[in-house]
Length: 292
Image (cartoon, rainbow, N blue to C red; front, side, top):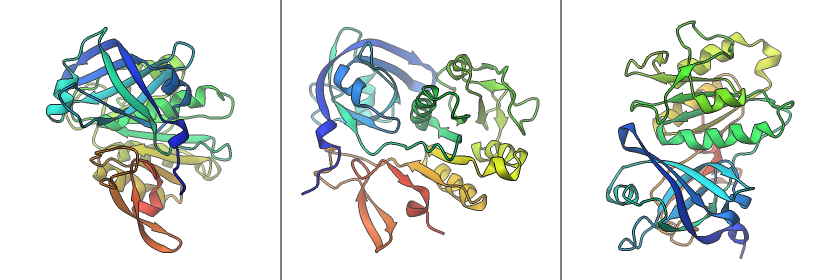
């Protein structure tokens, strides 16, 4: 029986190195987990034991890794009792972390303009994809769009990187990406300074319309976020005839494909099929999840 990804999933007792608490009940968690750091790819996640008294783990997307130091960084938001308990864990404590799990995003050199779109807790995988492009800086020209209705888990700053199609007032960017030389723009309907007052797809459309036909054909869309956002991004990609990869989110119990509790319907060449988000995904071709 084929068991995808099982040979690269590790269980580590990971020491908490940093636990930063941000606005909107969002938290940045950095742990020491060398084997997971070495094997992780953009789009993969970890299954974390949030508290010794809570047997069920919680799936959390990986935002960054440092393979040299063996560190793994996550961004998560409190949604329920499990993540609330995780937020109480302190530096120096150890967490049982299982990962990296799942099918990652795949960059393609024939599409050197990756358009990365993250919404809310879908932001971390987009940061990871952007980091992967850094190793091939001469090959890829990414543009990152982030949306949030809660305060962003970082202090936005005005971008010094010009982006085609952007209105002059849409200038807020993620400092980390700005330091990497990767352009980003932020969107929100909460009136945050420098952000586009609307949806991430508005920003994506303005960017795509500013490209010429040849440049548009160099774009591939990557997205992670709430289901309605992913559906809208998939529709935009279809409109512009662009390939699109989406990372899906579902409730998970085991996280390694055993319980089949996270299945979704996906269109295949043989017709509809039920696929497990944890190991068959979380990344899928958008056309298979959101067919025409």
